[in-house]
Length: 511
Image 1 (cartoon, rainbow, N blue to C red):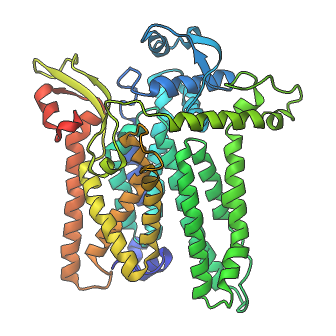
Image 2 (image 1 turned 120 degrees about the vertical axis):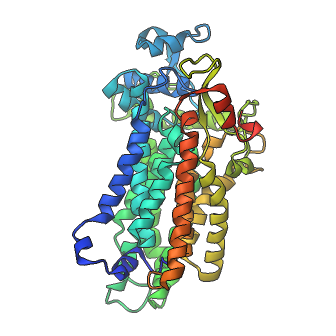
Image 3 (image 1 turned 135 degrees about the vertical axis):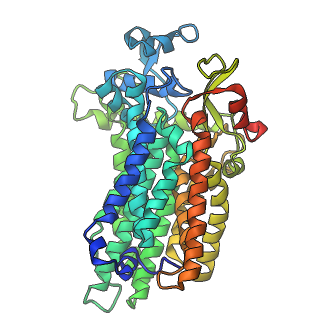
């Protein structure tokens, strides 16, 4: 395998030539991939000049937060009038009295509001922070994969694959919440991997050889807790990731202390590292999550918010009982959300892309050079990535069972945390959509590059097998690029002749 040991160890074993060492490819390569991803996400970002799918909720809620501090109710206009007001940049005439009931916490909408504050109430304004987070997530994944594999090439390949994923692209160009959820979950996971490397290095350098081992300071674990608290502030579906990562980190701590020969590794992992984990992955995410509700707590107009205390310092505390009741109502809403939808799908449908979501479609488009034109934004992953990732995840299972490779275990842990909680009996009849699977995409890409590294073989392996493996890996990346290029018009609202559009509907269920 090309990925032996930690990222730092594998990186040192490469022994790059002196001329190449002068070029900081560890950063330059990921930055170049990120620039490419940014171009795809910001190019014609304001098109279509229309409210796309659930932007009708989140873009308006974001502006309500910006103006009032809470999601404000809108008038009960006939269908489409409020949307037209919003698109015209005149949202002031659409407000009703009081707050609006919301299904998700406010932090993702605050992130959308940031773009509206800077660029105005325009499609570009309410989409730009989604595009920014989508772009930066590619940089995070490049650096994360490089750390995990010790290979800059594989790190860049992971980011390149995610840059070419259709679902990631669509949600990076749409003001929905899932791109922000994915961003903060990925950032938290990346911080924990950095914490693992730092913690092991600190333990290896200690002179204490007996007992449970030393107390350690874990700044990266603290950063991870903050990121995961913000992820929960976007959507509650971040909570299973947090729970799974706590178990994963404990296993890492126990393994590190046991490998270094401390006499009481369980005590050290449970009490010493565990105390840090309780604070950084327990108390801190709760505090950060609660802080994301500051607009509701400090103002007096949010849904279910009673008149706040006159003293601003007391408002967060006296508002907490009402916030708890508001959360109970949100929980009941999600458990009772069983209304059928044309584009709903089930978790077992997601890996095979059986039922994507049409975010935008019109047959009234012109300018395609044919009698009938179609224009669509289809929320679907790049099939070459999603279908190949099923095999790559099986490779991760094999690697973990046969070699106990911690990287394979971490990828499987993260993927399971984002996928399995959607299965019955947890949500037996709840309405679900393919884009709920977006946070899985980074871990699918990690599984793919780990598999490609296995195919290429060890750095000091025989040249011919490595050349064949590199050719296979290169052919796969080229296949992904061609697949993405073919689907690109239906991912970005391009205008196509109807027959060309229909040719891209590979399954009847995609229509």
